[in-house]
Amino acid sequence: MKGIYYHITQSVSEGKKSLAVLIDPDKMTVQNVPGFIENVNNSIITFIFVGGSTVETEATHILVSEIKKHTSLPVVLFPGDVTQISEAADALLFLSLISGDNPEYLIGKHIKAVPKLMHSDLETIPTGYILIENGKQTTVEKVTETKPIPRENKELIMHTSKAAELLGMQLIYLEAGSGALHPVPLETIRLVKQNLNIPLIVGGGIRSKQQLNNAFEAGADIVVIGTAFETNEAFFEELKP
Image (cartoon, rainbow, N blue to C red; front, top):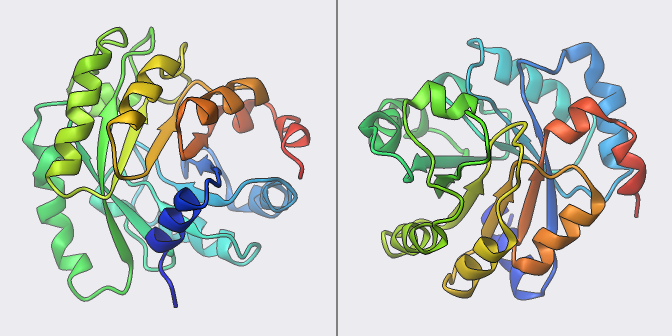
């Protein structure tokens, strides 16, 4: 069977854009999963990402297992910690926070994850994770004790992205953060995409269909939306096929 990364690269080569919903185990109860996933299934969403900055042990596995009962869409882990690795998922974004200088989030957490992953069938996708300043402090910034790259420094963001590609990472994730006041600037998305040969994910601060389309047009291959669905489920109506 073809893997998740294969399907991502195939979609990119065919010019198809993808949309992911990010579900935080701290904010989604198991009881609310069936109704929420029904809305997801009836939309243009193509991936379900699951993860958060601070999640209780086993909460991710319980949530992913329940989600899998209600959809055939790929479920991809977006972990903030080793405790969020679950065999119930289809793939794992193996995130390295390359915008910061905290070794624990550059490589430390990854080493701790190895005992879980060495004998696992979970598809692991090396991902360069770049936090971009959005107008307020994010949970990721607090937890990792790192600073985001200033949003106006698009050259540094592009150079960081390209360095990750040259290091062998398979995806780049530009992140403005949960509940961002400002999404990743379109000119930054455009510049990064022009200089990459690997798929580009963009998330944070996107709350409308227009902002979604703008990010796609600027070059994002996958856009991730989380807070907009948490605060306004009517947004699903705008995303029906």
